Amino acid sequence: MLLSFLHNCGRNLLKVGAVRAAQKSFYSANMSKRVAVVLSGCGVYDGSEIHEASAVLVHLSRGGASVKMFAPDVEQMHVVDHSKGQPTEEKRNVLVESARLARGDIQDLAQLNVSDHDAVILPGGFGAAKNLCTWAVQGKDCSVNDQVKTALQAFHGAGKPIGLCCISPVLAAKVFPGCEVTVGVENDDKYPDTTGTAAAINQLGCKHVSKGVGESHVDAKNKLVTTCAFMCQAPIHQVYDGIGVMVQDVLKLA
Image (cartoon, rainbow, N blue to C red; front, side, top):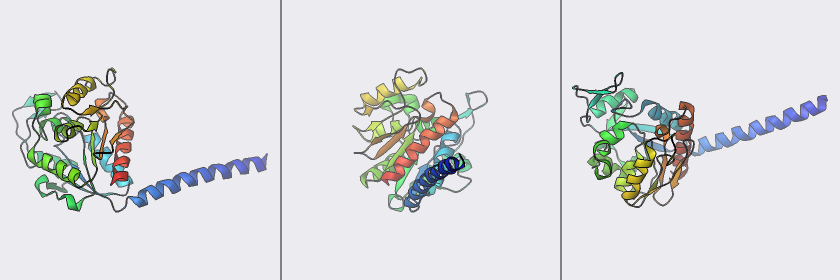
């Protein structure tokens, strides 16, 4: 019995060792990856979704990547009182508000140079649809902020991966005709806003691919990696894990 116990312990330790070795190999391979993260403010209703932004940063850190954060130096579309979900008369700046999430270490998006980075990731939140573009108001007929469009086109043109989550994949749908993205699972009550958003994406000539909250979709041709995050009414740990899949896929392509 003792020999059997020791044998099983040894086998389990080998399994744990193999997992740790694989993780170490993945992290070591990405130690030199330089990733730009583009924010859109601070707070789900008028800026970057805080949990999504934090998840992106944690997974990038765990993946061994170095990170620089950016945001456009523009006025927010509006400011929302998050305790009431109602707009206020206050005015705020996207770069200034994004600095809260970046702990002050952030740069104007105008300073983003694609040659200094291996990939770019844009978290979601209504700021992506209000401050980085006008999708929240105009849907598929929206316009994309010039600096955001320039940055996305620069990374795409250089063959460098772009990661997007939650509502931010609509930016890719506007900038890259014919691309493939996901904003969740269509015709599923857990994804209440996915069906309508997916229809608009398809109308733009792009392809929406239904993927669950724990998955990402990789458009290999365009090096776009997307995941639905809080487009799904899921527990926060599932959103966190799905963003982790997206980040890992971005780093693999970088």
